[in-house]
Amino acid sequence: MAASGGNQGVHIAIPEPMSAGYSAEAGAYNLRALPQYLAALHGAGATAIVIPLHETPARVAKILATTDGVLLPGSRADVDPERYGAARHPLCAAADGARAAVDELLIQDAFNLRKPVLAICQGVQTLNVWLGGTLIQDLPDEMGERVDHSPGREITAAHGLAVTAGTRLAELAATAAAHGEAQPMMANSSHHQAIARVGDRLRVAAVSPLDGVVEAVELAVASDTDEHWVLGLQWHPERTVTTNALSREIFHQFALAGERWRAR
Image (cartoon, rainbow, N blue to C red; front, side, top):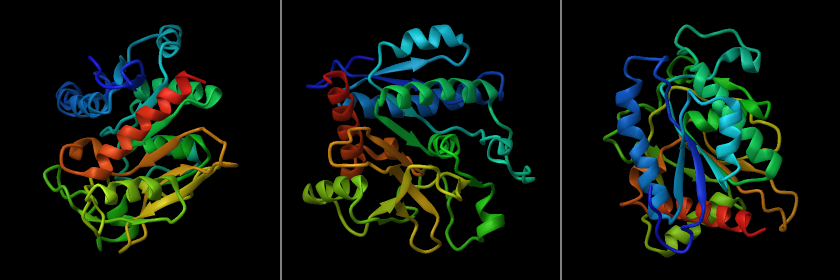
């Protein structure tokens, strides 16, 4: 995908959301979901490098050598609960082994080389588990239904967001507010799982205020000079980049982080 703007040299790796072997609906899901991520990156001036899930680890490594950041997208699959030491809940969907294998390579590369990471929906759940965290396997069953976290893609303001002061996300929200973003902050929502125990080195950056469900995490930096930019969101900012200032700012700052990494 062609890039535009000052960050056009920034290449962001993004895996296909679902593998063909996982579901007969995978192709249709990818055709619907993937262009939204690509458009959001394009709008931020970055070039998306799509990683096919059938690639060998050696081929993925070669592709990653050309990239400056990682975007982990959503999926209809769930993370295998064995990965965080839990028995499978009856409503936990099967894992997508091909996607999980590619995600592992992308996360390893990003953390080994300190590349920026933006993890969205199932992507943030994968990241949290990779860092030693656990998941709520079905929100309605385990947390009740005070908040509907799966109201449908057409609902762009499903519930509020309470952003943690002093976080990277709070800085992004402040910039968005300066650009005219209306308050209170709202998020779309398309998930039945969520973070339970937060992974090592992550801190909570936002919650759903009515039920306390974790809506965002970020890597806790050791100092002001720590440049490892890692942000995970339970909602889908790629769906609202044309209408929401915070969504645009998230992708803009992600692209800038990739630019800084490339120039290091």
